[in-house]
Length: 363
Picture 1 (cartoon, rainbow, N blue to C red):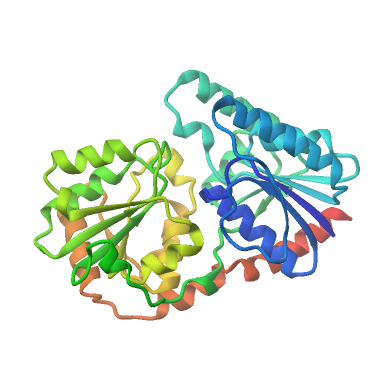
Picture 2: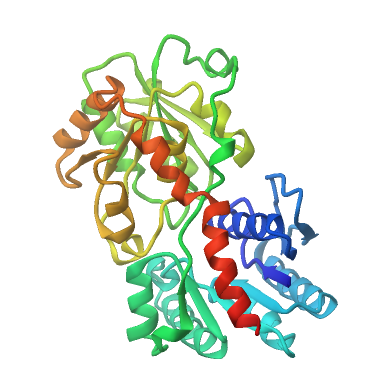
């Protein structure tokens, strides 16, 4: 089967990791898979990568859309998968439809991330329009599935649950001198990894927990960049924890295991919001696949999957958060169950089930 996957954002994003994982897993099953996009950092040896040149501002959206149109016409696909309900990926798919089956991968409640009323209205309209004009919609979260069915009016027979996956094989310990290079030798290191943009604005609460932590040797290693990076650097200074926080900036995804290798624990915190209740965390899956004791607040259907495998805490109780960090640094559970559990979220496992659905769709 010839499958074309059109990206709407950079492939170094969470959405990009998702479509890259889907593409590589399907290609390993013997399908002819093409993936468009920019900023690919992971190695995808089985995928035909169609690179889109990186641009900034409005030019990025215009150039990416035109590139996706060109690639869509060039690749005569049996199935076209567009990532996100976004014109950059969806319009080219619709223009190239022909005999191909169109699938929209709905991986976020996009409109809920924004405060600008015009942007909210635009993304809500885009979600409804594109979902109704595609043959099928895939999603990874039960709340999103309900939203697509109830708010966008799609029949459940047109909605396919495609779980969030990771490539578990890449998350193994590596020898590295990174701790020395970052000034973290002989320290207890807690990793927080996220794109510091509109969808990840909860680092301030992590800072509060770190400030109240009695362990003087604990350091927070913040991995990621974005429009809020400078804001959080200033916040660390204002809160008096500048010496306890190390900002690593952007790290390529395939280098993440090196950073995890110097960590003693990992933290994931998200405020309970409509947008966050519709997410499926890649980072928690990666932390647990590596074997890192992980501190996390639990809410929504996706995070419920990890109850019993993480050090959970009450979101509005900083003391509970601090206690979770202390227990994780001591590795109280000392179980390999979480690492084993992550195997079911390996893309190779997930793709086998998805392949059967694709074969029915293509017919």
